[in-house]
Length: 222
Image (cartoon, rainbow, N blue to C red; front, top):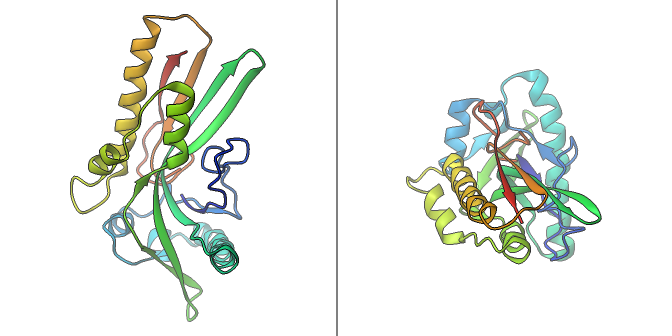
């Protein structure tokens, strides 16, 4: 999922890194991206959007979204001096229950800073990573503060970069393993309404885009 992320605040109510809702205006879905193009991009090479999405029926709306994203990135850079263009790799979704009911969260797992360059001759865009992937800080903060689950940025970085090409599947697997381990420990000690977790593949909402795999899930109790 290529997206812009506007809020880096600590309040979960307005933190887009915990409650991310992709739309045709703020995200380009790379779920069904061409595999060779995706490997090129994850390897750090400049890649055309049309190389990733070579079906015109998919490329056309994606190009419009890319224009919106690029405009937002420039606006945030010029007005606030911050960079907000990221590729979100892996989306974790879960519901937390308390006395007042349930709250649903949808958070990118890993974030990769990315630029969008225009190709005026063709209406295409160039995607280029400008730094390495990092663990979503809002996700790490929320897990530690609310659930006592420690997510180590260094461990997630190491998992994603076993080779020079970023591997979102390994970081997603690490999150699943960490959550599952916590679930097993807490289920032996308490009985409470379960929190339902769903972890999706990189690049899609099913947040970061890619090979057709089924979402995995885990349940943990508070």
